Length: 254
Image (tube, rainbow, N blue to C red; front, side, top):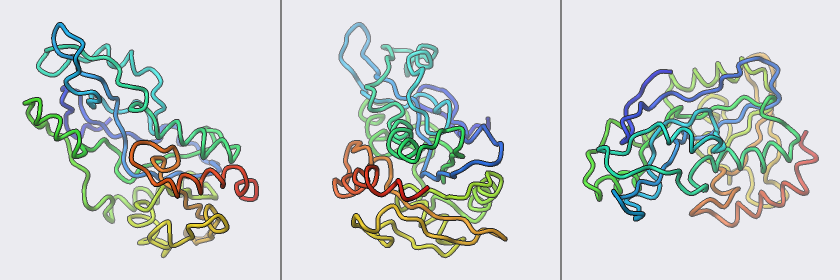
């Protein structure tokens, strides 16, 4: 794996991408940026957490579900070799991957073996919350890229399009606004926001044809897993729309 930078734990930040690159996938799923393995960092000789969800390693696979978190964390030393690391609360390890499996692929009766997974940014990015926690605890800010303003330039879009072509998938599933804004709209002229496709029960989660080279495929714009799975701060409107889609709309899709 290519190394991008370093987590506060000293572990390398790596590119995370699809490993099963065989063709004939049914869907191509495009998210925003890769997640990470999160640990709770405890003080020395006590059970008081210093940081409740510290990113310590790249997720072992794209849209990771949190499986094996304890074993991964057990091999990692805490920052400055002080205190100890334990797996963070389950909501911090693999929530998007779990939501993808249970609320997107399963309702469509599609397994991961039939899906090609991709992110606009194929590595973990430091969000403002992580940066604030590191500063609060007096830790140096590592060589950990922050979330970029431009989530995909022309070079990255070409890389994603090459993956989409290689997958031979007939449906492109975009998760939230960003994959539309930074990939589908610039290349294929799709709409730039999920809401532009409809924010009501009748229009949410429908298929929209577009041209990829010499073949036509279909776009299925869905809400981001954060909204779908009600993960942290989320929009109840989008969560409810997707919930209805899972039980009423999706049987007409595939």
